[in-house]
Length: 457
Ligand SMILES: Cc1cc2nc3c(=O)[nH]c(=O)nc-3n(C[C@H](O)[C@H](O)[C@H](O)COP(=O)(O)OP(=O)(O)OC[C@H]3O[C@@H](n4cnc5c(N)ncnc54)[C@H](O)[C@@H]3O)c2cc1C
Image 1 (cartoon, rainbow, N blue to C red):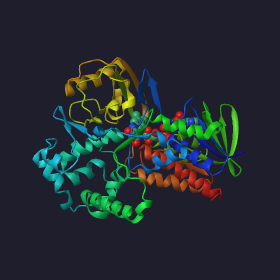
Image 2 (cartoon, rainbow, N blue to C red; image 1 turned 90 degrees about the vertical axis):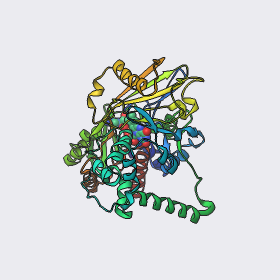
Image 3 (spheres, helix red, strand yellow; image 1 turned 60 degrees about the vertical axis):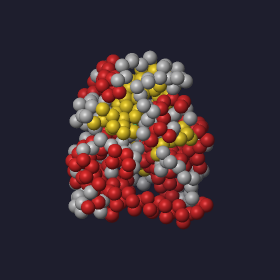
Image 4 (tube, rainbow, N blue to C red; image 1 turned 90 degrees about the horizontal axis):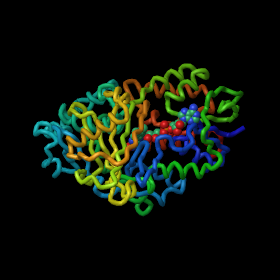
């Protein structure tokens, strides 16, 4: 009998497994694919390195840096080139640089004068929302209608590929929601957070962690992190091992995998909610129903590989497209302009995103039509009229969890239900946030809970 079985070898399951090994527990991580990492994997082809999911993480993603330390991947951490600080948002048929400070705000024509006034008078607005606020209602209340549609709209396309009307403000934007609740507004909250961080650094003195800025990835792509975690796990990670069923077994758990029956004292379910739901339904119907109620946005990624540099593309992170601007593409990243090793010398890699909650039918387009959609938008926006030399289209019918109205209550219900199922833990990016850092944090938190439960501290 294993101490712990982790079902799912995405980054959440891997982060969990690595921590459990460090705590001295017998752990087995079961992953259905023949490669570890789930969405955190990198495809290499002819010198191009194409991500299956996240391209970067922020300097503030402490848990991701901790995972790099715990897996030995830290030497491969790589800051993005300085120009990746430049981001564009599409408005009125062209790219506008997103503002980075007061001067660029004044000069920018991304918003009208009225839109800018609404934005800078945000601290004067004293209204408070209620828990049922959608992201659309929240941002409109704080920033006014124009900035909400353009800035928050771009942000929501980029993070959630979501519908601002159905995303829950407190669940999908807990930091900003907290700013309003505790400080009376976003700008006040942001200033207060910066002051608090500065105060904490001063208090820590020489013990303060290294100051980091900007965006990061790893040499060779994000998949380097997953491979490093897999190396730590060694033969405790089983690939090509799809979990078919789970059931209570005395004080522990029984797991059916490819005709084998395994037993464990504790089980961490790190599969995405729509995959975990049918496994749980026979164990606890309500748990299965709550997991099945989490909707995931469909997304297609179009990697466009150019052997010769695409001269029309600026040195930048990429651009995002708010809905309602007349373009189907959600955004295009410029990975080779962020990290030098993403394309062969003199080449370029561009990655377009299509789909999302407001354009679910996009995934029915064939690969050629998806490519033409992104290329057509690139031609209109930057004048790029050259077709790529190689293309990889990746489709996800269920990519990004949507933290919609009632999500926080549903997650509380999950936690309450788990109280009655000792030895069962959940990890994944639908629990506390949808990004890489939240997925890693959820895996680490599950591991810490298992260790505590097992009395190994
Ligand atoms: C297209 C895309 C772009 C993204 N971009 C960003 C970004 O820029 N920044 C950011 O922070 N985040 C981004 N994310 C989100 C980030 O990738 C996720 O938060 C993170 O990878 C989720 O990790 P996870 O382990 O929870 O889930 P997953 O990566 O989905 O891993 C779950 C694993 O469980 C396995 N599994 C499922 N069922 C079973 C079973 N029955 N038995 C065994 N194994 C099973 C799956 O094969 C998979 O490997 C993006 C995601 C996508 C899809």
